[in-house]
Amino acid sequence: MKSARRIAVGSIFTECNHFGGRPTDLADFERQELRRGAEVLGATTGTVGGMLAVLAERQADAAPLVVASACPGGPLTADCYAKLKTELLDRLRAALPLDGVLLALHGSASAEGAGDLEGDLLAAIRELVGAVLPVVATLDLHAHVTAEMVGAADALVAWETYPHRDAYETGSRGARLLIDVIDGKLRPAMAMAKVPVLVGGVNGHTEGPGPFADVMRFAKMLEGHEGVVSTSAFLVHPYLDLPEMGGGGLVITDGDMHCAVTLARRIAQMFWERRFELDPPVYTPVDAIELGRQVEGGPVLLVETADCCGGGAAGDSIATLRALLDARVTEPALVPVVDPVAAAMCHRANVGARLTLEIGHHLDPRWGRPIDVTGDVLYLGDGRFRYTGGIWDGHLGEMGPSAVLAIGPVRVLITTHATYDWADEQYRAVGLDPRSAKFVVVKNPMNYRLGYAGLYRAAMILDTPGPTPAVLHHVRYGQMPRLYYPADREITGLEPVVLRGRRHIPKGHE
Image (cartoon, rainbow, N blue to C red; front, side, top):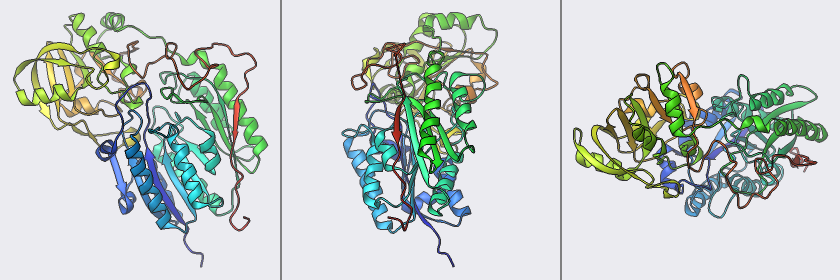
């Protein structure tokens, strides 16, 4: 009787920003998700949930390591990464011998002293388990895929949807691929082709008409032909500042590296050709408010992408709030801001109090100055809510002590902690209904398409200061050398950079 395959499962998952946000520490993971050992086996949703379901279906034993995920922010502190990495490696070492390693990663995480966190982690795992043991990792389609990552893993499999709604399915695909490698049914040959295109995510949706949707459809069309096992298209997270950044395509074939390289190049070339279409039109808050007033009914979404917590920003911008107040809007409006000082002042004052306070830019003052406002405290709470979709579907969100401050018709949701925006869960958790508002400020460049689907009358992408802007024409990188788009609109003779994966060594053939 064949013994059960034993596969280690672990994750360090977040997205980092080198231009803003506050440093990510262990408390951020503890507030979002930090499972250790047997606790990992309780995951039923998300990427890890998909992995565990397939392992159970294939009668493989999961050796649980650490699963840590946090809302995006600045790079992990050195201490935070050292603790997570050490614990994961210690548990992996204790779990040996194994048949494989399965990891749920993002691909655009960074830490103090480790710019490419995933590459560093995968290299350490490869050194620990040796050359033969297969290692498979899943990635976000915004991953910055590096030579270190491609060189250490046998296969990398990325999410296929943006807005992200296939984390579970991607975990399942990664697990099935790993088991096929273990069983000798697949000899993965992996190639990644990249072009230096750095763009925001507004036009990076993967369904319906759109430039990246076309690239994704082309990539997925290749699967199942000429021995192609898996394809991924990448729209790199552009708010890192690292060398060799760019998007493109990754192809895994059954043993045919030449085919993998050829097709990966075709995906990357198509991505380059569509680069101009990936930049959306943007509006000043003043213009967006005026245009929104001409729209019948509501809500009109004012999309302040430059302060996206889901991209690593602090969430403390009041650029759109300032514009709404300066415009003296009479229509109902909802605005979120992360400001622990203002939240604490509201809690001390209590519901019903009228107070004047300074709000905004207390966490990341590089992008603006606070404003003084006077309003009435309508609501106080602990800031807990539950996600109803996306990558953390079903997980508890923690805004921390939160308040709703009424400034005339404007309702400001003031929170202590930044949280990832999927839909309107944060607003509803404090008794605010976006359906009754004329203007709703959202700070995610993509998720509103699903989270507010069928609800909003118009959405306008704003041009405001912040570390996650919708267009990157004015961003200056320190580590990313020229030539790249959008700094260079044309690059004569451009050829995609190709990263070839390691040669897989089947067990018994080392």
